[in-house]
Image 1: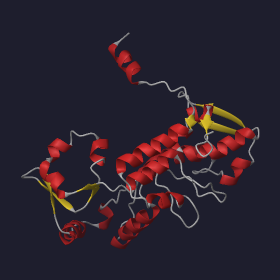
Image 2: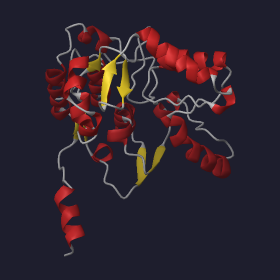
Image 3: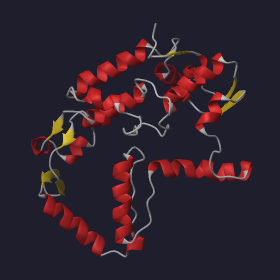
Image 4: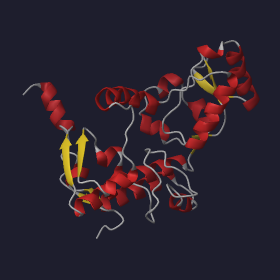
Length: 267
């Protein structure tokens, strides 16, 4: 066996258990123990993905009309716990570490330093981030934007940003005179939109949430439900129980499509 194949075998883990269940609950508790969230995060989770609540930043699954008491998946709960962390990253941290050093850190270790407490500017002479005032930060951004033609600017954002933050960001860009607002989700879906338009005649999906409770068959083409949209497992489980047939085309054996233990009913 080649060294490359041996390496691949070492990093490929085989999981024989079901998706969800007690493992999901344990994963949430472990993250909560690392983030030191305040007790108020429990109330936040109870309002997640519910009417008059807020949309989860983990995926784009809709707020259902008939919601569960806990209307979030393991990934969604972890995302909220990470966002609401009580860990803080102060200027003292950056005084101890150069940018060159931090480039060698893992993303996970960087995130575990917590939320930034001050605006920072890079100082090339010391190779460190140094604290600055909000006025200094906004003035520097303003100077750069004023020097540009608005059509030259691109306001890129993460698809994981909240709807509220994305709205304010887009409003600012348009007031500036720019409509270039790509995000990571947009870049992912541009390819699927082109393909859907060529094959189905429309660039977006035409299925609505209520269709899931009425269809006789579902076809999956490379969609890993357990990792990409775990909240889909609830209506998927209901569909299987009423006799809906599931057909999947995927080189990966998705555990969520084989076996699922509902964390809200783990027994």
